[in-house]
Length: 162
Length: 342
Image (cartoon, rainbow over all chains, first blue to last red):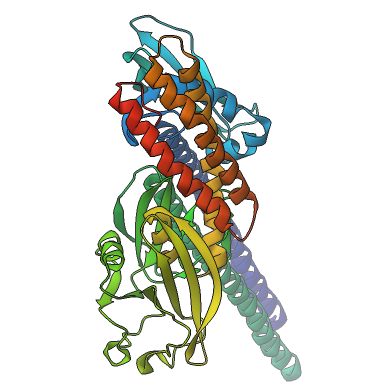
């Protein structure tokens, strides 16, 4: 009789432990899911800030920015510099350097006023294997130093992050 | 029967002990894992905030800011920033700083590098726990003092009076001398107890446009020479003050010259187009044709400097010489209302 009672007590303890571990397991699974979703939202945030910093870099690129007596003009692109920059940036020996700066992105500039021109591609390195894609469009002045004429344009920066 | 009951009680205790130990082990493992995860997370958050500072400040010129970060030690190497076990490579990083930045207050500053046209922004970073002691009252020292942000822990003494220099528990102290031979100078008594390598000195020979910089560090109570390098412009000179070692300074300067070479290539093509333009006046064409060999000279010297170590004084001289002549041609272009070269 006593033996049976002890056995029941042991089974009770084991049952309590089993329930405890099941609850612990459920809690752990829930915790992992929360952590995973936090990591995903962090990754999206990192991608977005990376995209903003690439766009910032492009907007202040000395390679294309207008300057007068070494004083840079914000939101202004020198069209003569732009023509030269396209060939220099896309030289094979410079491709790694600009990849470090712009990573997977596509940068193009388009005249919109007085006439609507075709988009000129400054840099393009795109991948099909990306997780996030962001596009930034910013109005710019396109300045031709030869004719001293300003035109309106849009710089379009598309960044892809893995 | 009594014997059997005693066995049951013993078994219960053993069972409780094993189950308790298992539960405690599980919790201990979870806590340790969580602790290391949280440390990595703090480090990666700090690294990300440094990264955003690097990205944000490197596009704006002549700004300085005080940034509050978690109290960690940031290790800066050539093209690499590490916090704890987390590190990230930045292959073309231009960041002049001490090799380790400690404390929760970081000072970031940017200045543009121009020779004679702007090609990049130089980013400087240091800790408020590092003391900078400027020795001398020359115009150069005054100008450096003005250029360093007010948030920096800095002092200016007219002469190297060892008794005036106090130890304020800084983990690093950096002296800046203008054309003073540093080797015979001993360490101030107040700093004698600081470990070797934690007291450094920079001797500047030149002016704010160009010159040489000699790097020193403390060893057994005196300053020992650790190499010589060269600078063009005040921004690079300020970079030599922030950088601890000649190697770190030169690594950054090489990256600066890589970019300068590329930007120069663009200026060469642009000036060639202007020179070949039929609508330009003779005076304009004269300024452009005079500029082309100068730009070409800057380009080849920049490419040499980007590829060799230590920096060659000859190439530095070629850039400064060509820059001076190019600025004259730029003024000529401006005088005749021509599109300016830069």
